Amino acid sequence: MKAKLGAGLDELHGKIANFCGKRVFGKQQLTRLSIPYGVNGGTPSETQLAIREKYGGIVEEWKNATEEQRETWNAEGEKTGISGINYLIRLRWPAAPEPGLIWTLMQSLSGFDICNSIADMGDGVLLAVGNSGGRLAKSTDYGVTWAITQPFSFSTIGRAVASLSGLDALVAGDSEPYLWRTADAGASWTQEQAPNFGDAANQMIAASATLLFYATSYRPAVHYSVNAGVDWTEGPSLGAEDEASAVCYMGSGVVLAGTSPNAHIFRSTNNGVSYDDMGQLGTAARVYAIVKVTDLIALAGTGPLGHVFRTLDGGLTWTDLGRLGAAEQVQAFSCAGSSFVVASTYPLAALYRSSDNGATWVFLMSLGSNSMCRALITTDADIMLAGTGNSATIYRSLPSTP
Image (cartoon, rainbow, N blue to C red; front, side, top):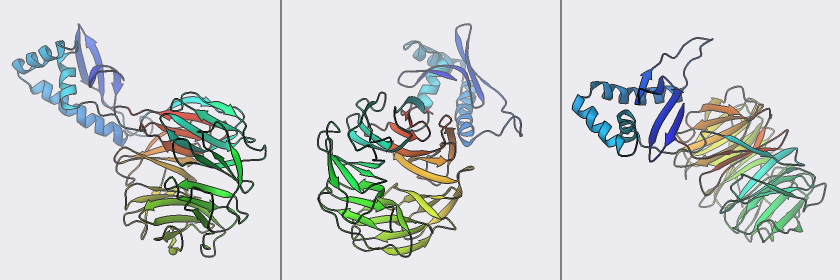
């Protein structure tokens, strides 16, 4: 279905859900089609059914309208060069762009094998790191184009990049315990010692311009800094686990940490000074990602069977929402808008989308021939970006009308 967009929908051409839009003898027509069921024809998705119901109501209203009503709608439509039925569609269903619906390939990051993390510096500036021989990718146009530099030592695997402000950011390594700092949005970098505990990073996040958390890969601890990473405090051991695999800041001192190899959730109420064990998430082995959705709602992505778990009470209790398709790992989440969440999975770098704060999920697409998608973010303009493995390809999603 092709749509011409104005303030709403101006013209419809092609097929969408259960309807076909076309112009016949100068008049716009929206006709009902039949959606085949069964293995070969396929069952309509939730999105298709919702669109069919919405358009169905508009079509019925048009059919049941009086001639006078239709003439009024036609006259109003002619004022902006559209037909009466499209004027009615615009009237009943004004355009409401939603994030994360349609994804477009931007470019592969030259010299990268895997894109591990992307940071939004604001105003269209993005920084990306990964398995890249010390390379950094920078965009100044919300991810449309990327410039590659090599500011880090060749052995550095950029595991995480955290934005502290519009100019300041930190990069944490995976294979060596170093931090790299920029004060000019990635133009230049200085090497610093990572938290002085010999730990490489699984993840590093900035809760504010000064408060950072550093989930370690060599032991089960989340180190923290209250002065923008200049000094670090060693985090307490998270039970008998091997590593801290994910961390999320919920606000008001609440920190959630996920672990491996038994996928426990640990919860702090004092900015990471101490933690309580909330228990294992089902039978999972690793927590790959945790994301804050609201002040009380958070999601956790696990493996090896790719389940999503959800809390409604700030991490105290968790509900298993089931497996995302055939996923083995739920690798990343990103929230956008008021209730939308996108999740990325391994294998096939498959994307799933929720429009109800993670309660239910719909498959969107697989990102080319890639096998993984560890980097998933939403910018200050509700533009979403995904960075993949295999070819370190960047995909982008603009808010679009369903």
